[in-house]
Image (cartoon, one colour):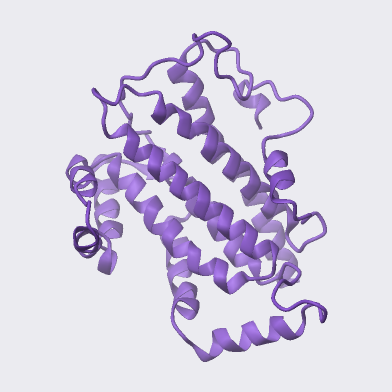
Length: 284
């Protein structure tokens, strides 16, 4: 997939570094391929974030907001990866809500300058809470994005509405105390290793959490046609040794970063094959 985008990858993909850093071997875990996809996205979130740091922040002050969103998503996705890798699936699902709401904002910020200004003005707990009620509660941003997609002729990869409906329905089971969630938590605890207090092997139930985390992660990168950021940036490919985490022949800083961002939907198209295969295996 990297080579098809023109990248020159040597003997290992980016996600292998994440796997080594986290130190939990998931190669024999249920749905191990999904952990590999998440590791790749963690690395890509880090690399694409550098573009926002390279912007001239006096001319393009909103670039720093997108950098902060990148880091927030990177750390939330890593939390999901670590929790699932240690058998704490219900706790990982709680992180999905934050991942989803942040992805919604990222998409909206790209097409709505007013909300971006309101967001950066939230410098107190009170104003942050007011912002959430104004823009995120009661599916406000979901409805806004749906309307804008229709009005502007935009679209994105995947069956978004069905995916989100399924996500919210199942998240509600763990976001609040429920008998069903408690039942499954106790069952997975009994089936864990008898010599540990908390940490368990990865669970099969993490399929939902991992697959939805992958879907949510690509949302800000999967709008077509892609709304431009229009930042005035300083090329890091022309400074001394240059910043070139994955070799690519282009000399254009803008093109290089666009190619990095293109990897998010490209890898997702590959992940769909695994979703379909896993779904088929569960139904057989």
